[in-house]
Image: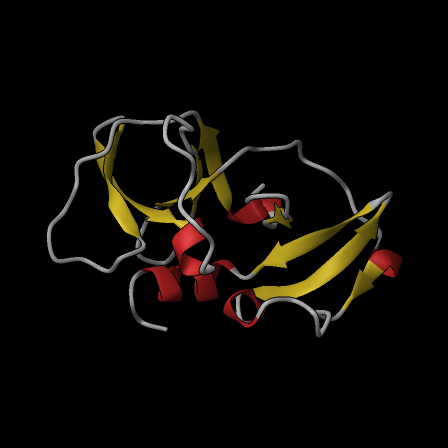
Length: 136
């Protein structure tokens, strides 16, 4: 979850999901890089998805959660507001990205699944990481 939007990441890309971790700030990095976390001895870059998507920063005192995804360069943490369950979706409920998605999010959303009462936006993790690291 980011704000009131429900995002999904293909489960095979997820290494793990963890609660808030203390971060070490890094000077002179892209705005969306929140810092570095120590994940059992491995240094992992934490990307603030809110900033990638042009959303306002999280309220003071609201701590993010980490979705650690696998990339060709190693794990990266995507900071989100809340984490849901692993769900199975039907291919029949998939649709291309709606036109009314904000432009700042459109390039990071591959499509949507219609669920009961809400949409599941499929996050393109490569595009989100490129945007977060300043490559997009």
